[in-house]
Amino acid sequence: MGRQRDTLPLDPAWAAFAQRHAGHPFLQEDPLYALSDRVIDAIKNEFAESAVPGFFTRDQEAFERDLTQTTRHGFFLGRPIDSGCVWLGEGEGGQAGTTRPSAHPDSLTVGEFLEHLRSLPRPRQQAALDQLGHFLLGQEPQMTTNEAMRTIEEFLRTVENSGPRQTAQRRRGERPDAEDLLRRRQEAYAGWLVLNPTYRTEVNVLRQHCEGWVVDETRFPCLGEYGAYPATLPGGESREGQASPGSVEGRDARPAPPGESRQGHPGRFLDFYQRWGLDRFLTWELPQPMGIVRCEVSELAGQAPPLDGVALLIPWPLLRGEQVDFQESLGRLREERGPAHLVEWLTSEQKGEGGRAQITYQGLFFLYRVYELVLFRRYKQACKGRLAFLDASIASVLGYTEEIVRKQRQRLQAALRCAP
View 1 (tube, rainbow, N blue to C red):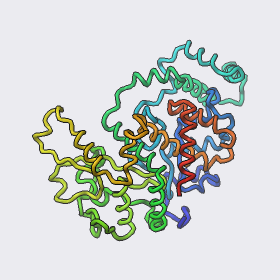
View 2 (spheres, one colour):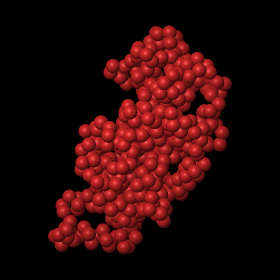
View 3 (cartoon, helix red, strand yellow):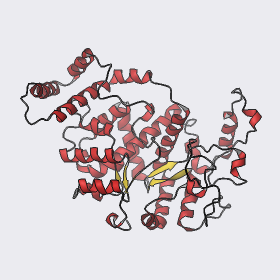
View 4 (cartoon, helix red, strand yellow):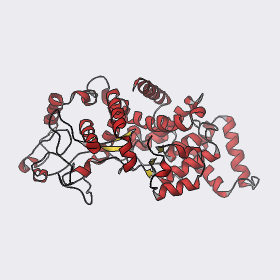
């Protein structure tokens, strides 16, 4: 895979992390993806019915927790994987945007605590009571105060996340805002992409031509470097030092003419991003979809940004009020001009997937992040014979049933087996 990582300039975060875990076999993975605390807790929590007994060793758990605390998504080429936003398959699924339950839930009652304790299998009830009782009585000399606190917090978190209670809390949650809905759409699209055989084939071709360049540069090109955003990033955030259209010396920020391609490795990436609606790659396995570019017509400076999509050029006077709905115009453009390679995605709500298509692809992307990029790579042997336990743990994170997680995981594995 090109040069070895230890010959590349090291990021301070990676250097410190690698030093703390010197000699650990997982350090050889590149990319080295992180599991979220929520996933680690769900797998590890010995009080939860959905836990996977003995899945992590103490050393492995310490490694995973340190990794997710050091960098949210992991490392690639000796640098943190930074999505620049919070949507990157972090386990919210169809409930994206809800807040993580506190380890010390203020509204937890003694009755709820006891009710959940009674719902555990008797061996786990006894183990929980014995462990906590011994500690409180000073009869557990090997357990430190911090370890006892973590044990109690894991138990409380299990109660807080338990079925009916969690569902009721989510129903009372705040309505997601427009930016949150946009992030959900991006995450769902990423889930559709990683399962799409045409996309995966084209990624492999691009990688064959450009992997060496990426290793040398220790990064991927980003559309923003080439004037893709007239004034703002997708989502409306300002980018300091943002290049204006065509301002990067020696780089053509305009779309390539039909039938032609840009030159050089960056040009190959821009052609690929334009075709698939991406802002950049985070790693070869993680695409970051474009968001919405918000600008005035004058900011385009007579040039179209290097991305494919639709635009409604709406005069200012027509933007008064909210009575005019522009969705019909956008829908007509989607149906009449949608590119052939995106038809399945653009029409998934109308043809067979139903109204939950976006939630389904969000869930698939999360399972891809957890199972394919981490568990099946670092813990292949530990996963054997334990998939049902793992499905139950992941279901507790997503708020899905175990059956839904199992079916989605099987769909994911089947699609990836058939993919190039």
